[in-house]
Image (cartoon, rainbow, N blue to C red; front, side, top):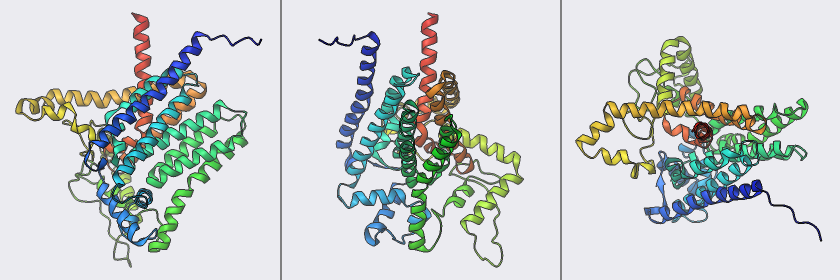
Length: 440
């Protein structure tokens, strides 16, 4: 008889970890399904929910090449995906959105952390799955109409595929490039601004190959696949409105966050950036407005630095409290957040918005940023796949941060990369926890 393989303590430990990596997303999914069942309509409208449904109405009435202005002012990708769900059921559309987004987020969390558990930093898989699955704002936002959580799931799938490729160097690498490119293509279909993050991640990935030729081919193939979705959006707009653009709101968005007296958020103050039309034109195009804003930044370096700092504060600001700044008023977490209850009386308001509240808010902002970079260095020092994971995760977060600085300071803009920032932050927390345990 053949000898049975000896079961080692490490094998038992690994099996137990895998159970947790399945259990956390599943439990979070069930909690959200209960929440959905007890919520009118099955979910919430996100910050731009009404506008997305205006686009869906146009697609439902006129088809893919609808001329409804919202579909070219904003990228049409997310409304198109919702329109496909409308074809299944009109009356249950929000239920469908909530269920599909929640399933996708749960699976992506499992698949991402499962691949991390196979690397040289397997210890971070458990806390990453726990924090990602049960972070109130991030997790509950899968029940909201908005691109943020699906994009966050796409980033997890992308990094998971990249880890699989490096853990299996003997397998055909080109298929991984196609898979990774497809996940970023889906993210970019919903919000094209994440093309840049995808490109940087692919470059970092490609540079890890010993064969320079293979690395370049991986970068090129993944990038080519990634650009299929923006090309499709441009093609739609060419047919629908005869314009070769993904959207026409970049200049407007950049202009909102720039100016002599504004702070860089949506509630702008003071005069707009000067941008007269160039004769013989009588109106300003979106591309021309982009140029005007860039020129203003270049000719006002001191004001640009100040705006960058305030937009950074807004980007990392808490969801509530004295330093809150952004478009997360519909954040499901605010329905149960303790700070919301405290504000119901004068003493509570003084506590939340007074010196103590400001101290806690600044501690939250600076603490997030400190843990982000500490976690990056913790994973990077481990080398191997962990180094690739750290570089890819931080690059995506920083690019989202820089895009916010270049456009509008808004804490909602950090949600699409929040799974990656949480990964780095919990790596820092668990590393500190281990060192404290050893010291004691």
